[in-house]
Amino acid sequence: MATIGQPLSVPEAGWRRYDNADSRIKYIGDNWVHQTEQGTQYWYNNTVAIGDYDSSMLFKFYGTKIRFICRSSAGRSDNIQVIIDDSITEYFSNVTATVSEYRLNYEKTGLELGHHTVRITNKATNGYGLHWDCMDIDADGYLVLSKALLAVTMADGARKEYELAKTEVDSFINWYNTRDAGSGSPYYTFSKPFDLGPFESRTDYLVFDKIQDFEIMEFEE
Ligand SMILES: [Ca+2]
Image (cartoon, rainbow, N blue to C red; front, side):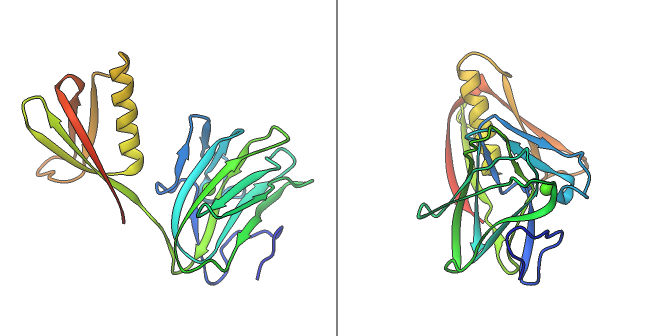
C-alpha cells in the first residue's frame, strides 16, 4: 500500500483514477484556471485545475476511500481543506521542497460504503494556488453525476425540457441572471445530441424575451 508522499503515476490495485477534467466535478467561483498543455509526465491526462485562495471544488462519489494525487513543489498551496459529508474536516499540503511528480498528498479510507460529498477548498497561508490533478477512489466505486431537468415555459405557452448536467444548468442560470440584469447574449443555446435525423448537429436557441418562467428538478445518476 502506498503511503503519503509516494509517487503514484498509476492507481494501485483496488483503486480507480478520475481526472480533474471530469465533468462530474463542480468548480466553484470564477478563479479556476484549467491548463491542458503541461505534458503527461507532469499531469495525469495532461490536465490540471489551479484555484487561488478560497477556490472550492465539489463532487460526490460512491465508495469507501479516496486519494488525491498531484505534482507537488514549493510553489503550491500549503493548506488545503477537505470536508467529507459535512462531518469530517481535514487539511493537507501540496508543498514539497523539491518537485515531486504524481505525489500522493492525501488519503482517507474506511468510510462507510455509500455516497459521500467532498468539498475541497484552498486555504493557503503561503499565497499559492491549489493545483488539482487527479484522484483515486474504490475500483468498484464511481463519481456521481448530478443532473437536472430544466423545464422552460415560453411566452406562447410552449414547454421545452432539457435533461442536463448540473454544471450546464448552472451555466443557463448564470446566463439568465446576467441577461435579466441587462447584459449578455439575447439567447442561450443548447446542443441537442438526439433527434439528429440526417443532420450532424442540432442547436436549440432559447430567446430570453420569449421565456415566461422555468423550473429545475435535480436528480443523481
Ligand atoms: Ca489531470
